[in-house]
Image 1 (tube, helix red, strand yellow):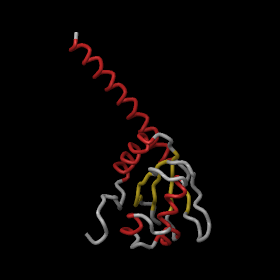
Image 2 (tube, one colour):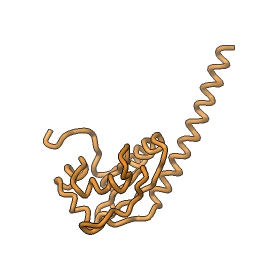
Image 3 (tube, helix red, strand yellow):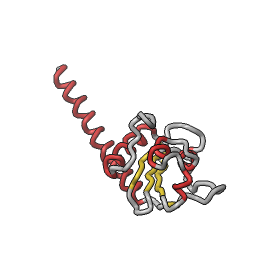
Image 4 (spheres, one colour):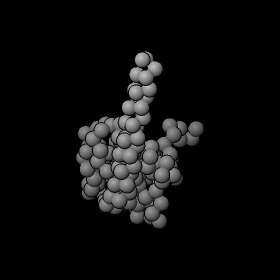
Length: 144
């Protein structure tokens, strides 16, 4: 009896994982199809949601250079993208030599607001694997 109970639990967990994987795949399609935005001129707000979510940043030629997500904070996606403009991210520090204003020179972004933390975490990993961005935030400080 215990063996069949464990098998049933394992089966249910596998079905749940398959459903979750399909949902993340759908979210990735939605992120990739989302509207492309330009970074705003100085003293203008970033045209992104104040909700939490996942975003991609593309360079002038359209190559994905960064995939990110919001974890916390009141301003959500708009705040996180503003942080990049202000040089307050490892992406800006490493890829743009600390000069977030360079994003205003032809870089673009796409985003998808997502409420669930787990979905955001899984989607950022899926989008990173799919796009193979130039910059990977691997937790290494500049110069080390």
